[in-house]
Every structure is written in structure tokens, then in C-alpha cells.
Amino acid sequence: MRQPPFEHCLDCPLIIKLMDACPLSPFWQIVQEEGLNGLTDASLLYELFMVIISLLPWIFGLILGILLLKRRDMRSLIRAGTHLCAHITCDVVKVIYFKEDRPDGSCSLKYGLPSCHSIFAGLYTSWVLIEILVIGMKLKTRHLIAVISMLIVPYSRIYLIYHTLKQCIYGWTIGFIFAVMGLTLHHQCKKRRKNKQVKVKQ
Image (cartoon, rainbow, N blue to C red; front, side, top):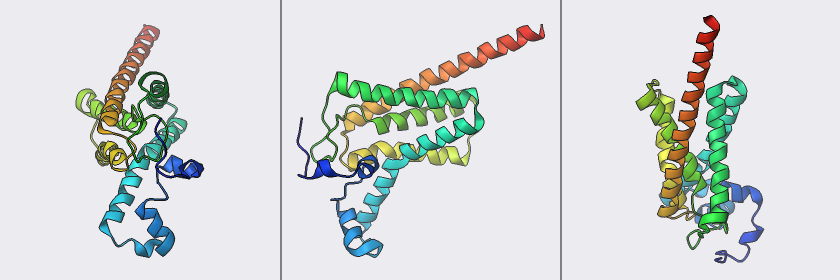
């Protein structure tokens, strides 16, 4: 397995690892030395934007969990469950099957194939687009913003040197497959519930 890019990478606080924001990057160095006033370079703002985009799967995952607790309906349960199963699958196949390192320069020493962030983005985007284009759900502004944001997530992972293009493509593909399986399960559950309601009325 490759070595960390810096000697003290393994001492990095857990919260920084979760945020995927290397404190040794130019952005964080300038924030520490000059504060937010030092962020005048467009490249630094671009890096901050990429870090924020990379955090979106965590934020969207939290939103899905809140919606599940609030609505407690079958669709929310299956959708959240599908994301959870996809994430577990990602962690398992990384260690047991693929065992491919992340690109040189990455802060993380974990295996990188497939990209879990890309799995989430692929699943979320595919789920929304299938519901709109195939099932006929009405397109709303929040759907459009979410899809565009998720489309940028794999690129942010490549830009921040956490994954290669191959690892992100694998992740997106796995996410699409899980979206199809989750929506198929949802359709079958709805169909079975309708059949039960018809039998009760008869």
C-alpha cells in the first residue's frame, strides 16, 4: 500500500478526514495565516467550492434521513435503505474485491475503487431522473439544483485527488444499478399494496 504524502497525515483529526479537506492545502494554509481576508485568489475559492461540492453526499444523506423520520412512508424508507446498502457494498468491495489504491498525493490511505461519493451521486441522480423521465414525477427547481450538484461530485473527487476517473466511473455505475433496483422494489411494493386494497374492497 502506498505511503501518505506527508509524514503527519495519519495524525490528522477525524473531522478533517471526514470533510476530505487537507489542512496542508493552499486554501487551509492561507485561512490559518491570514483568515478569510486572504481568500482573494480565484483558485483558492475554486478549491473551497470543490470541497463544498465534495461534502454534498454527507449533507444530502442527512436530508434523506430527516425526510425518512418526518414522512415515515414506504418511498422514503426504500430510498434511504438503498443508499445505505450501496454505501455498505462500496466499503465491502473496496477491501475484499478491488483493493485498488487511491491516486498518488491523496490524503486518504483507504482503498479508492469504487468511489463511495460517486456511488451516492450516481444513485441520487439516477433515482431523481428515472422518477421524472420514466415514472412521470413533476420536475421542480430543487430537483434540478440537486441533480446539477450531484453531477459535479465525481469531478470534485478527482480534483481533490481522492479518486481517479476510473474509480468515479465505477462508483457512478454502481449507484445507477442500485437506483434501478431500489425503484423496482418500490414499484413492486406499491403494486402489492394496491392489490391488497382491491381484495379488501371486494
